[in-house]
Length: 188
Image (cartoon, rainbow, N blue to C red; front, top):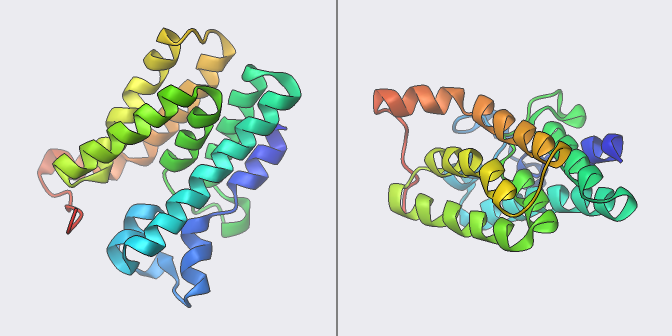
């Protein structure tokens, strides 16, 4: 289940969707194959397709793991999908930041919390106009919120791995935020 989660996570919709339009996302904007860069370079419809695809792969990986072996395996397979998203086998290990895939995992394994975190992310983006701030806030509250929902042990460890990975993948954003140089999402 974990290997399947990684392979599923390696299907990077931030690369696939732009390629369907003849665009190499690695050569556009920030070069990151994530929904935010697709939004900036290709518009909201393409970004929504990327976000939904990336969310779905985290959800499906967690769902399969959960149905086969329970929540701990669901979190492990979900984390593997996030890892695959960040370091995709199919795209030379150059992936996104793992936020949408983590949201998908959360939506399957703790639906109210997952939806709440997704709505919180959208509200923070609308208020700050910076997806990086929203992503980092959600990463920080993810594990404590799961603990409050009753998850323990390895479930929290796998979720924590996803939160740490998201934070690590945002290091350049953190530096730009501290320098006051993080670009805003226009029109949000």
